[in-house]
Picture 1 (cartoon, rainbow, N blue to C red):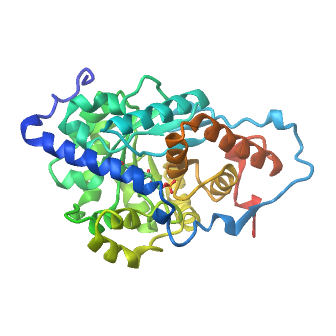
Picture 2 (picture 1 turned 90 degrees about the horizontal axis):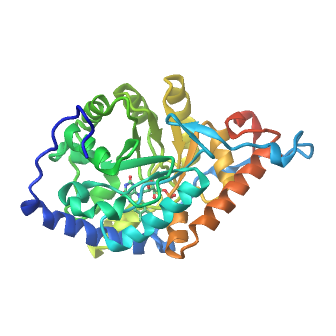
Picture 3 (picture 1 turned 135 degrees about the vertical axis):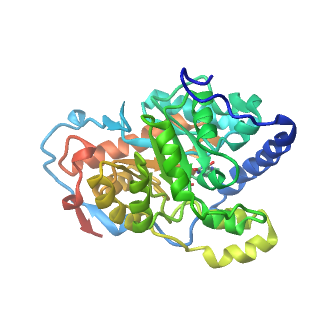
Length: 356
Ligand SMILES: Cc1cc2nc3c(=O)[nH]c(=O)nc-3n(C[C@H](O)[C@H](O)[C@H](O)COP(=O)(O)O)c2cc1C
């Protein structure tokens, strides 16, 4: 499925790597179960509810005249929302991805797939990632640290082509890898390798995200310099990956205990990412602990261009009610935008916020 003119498919021996895909699959299913537990939540909060949107009793327009339509990474979406990258690679992951993709398509929002490392190792896993329903913006995903461990721009491009995706999300998860027994902690030089992937995939967008500890201002500056199309702050206050890994292994649990409240709260991460990123034309996705449409509106007012949500939609997928959950979330966002006196989410700004 490589696109015309692209590099030849990288050679990946299925004989040696199939066990890797199986091992990853077991871990991915454990992640689903553990992330669904309340004990996997960050011990602190996102900081988003430290703000309130300025309520207007005279919103100035009919609710029906509010439009959530927003361009995100070159696609016109029905709302500035991304179902964040979660899973793939097992029959259970396939069912979850089918439910997420169907609802994302029907509501016209973006969706990220789970890490494609297992798929690169075992292409027969494709249907567990690429489902029949196609959201208007579909993103592939890889761990950025893998760029130090044998995967390169060829693999990244091959993954995007295999999935028929519109772009690639690279995730930065140093805390998760450090807590996980045998985790991949070779993070030296990762920023430079991200730049090489950006160059290979251009004009397709590369987005770089954290997974729940947030990006520091210096991280954002480095990623902007690497040429990424968007940063996703994935801040602290929602799923805590030290806690998830800590529940898979007793010793990892002891290490993880000290990191229960680690990281940049999402509100702060958005605030310090928005100026350097947006002045360089780089989009800012806000995620990490966002649970409803009011928190999404606060995140947009703080400077995000779109919002990402993972765990709450995982819980909905496990109960086969993603369509309803997405509908409620978008109703909340529409009402919040309206009650703040605007006709579109892109008009939200810090001037719409007061401290709670
Ligand atoms: C079950 C599960 C699996 C995840 N797998 C991935 C992944 O493969 N790649 C990735 O970039 N992020 C992954 N994430 C992280 C999310 O995309 C997100 O950054 C993080 O969970 C914080 O958002 P939340 O608080 O809304 O859950 C996963 C999250 C969950 C809940």
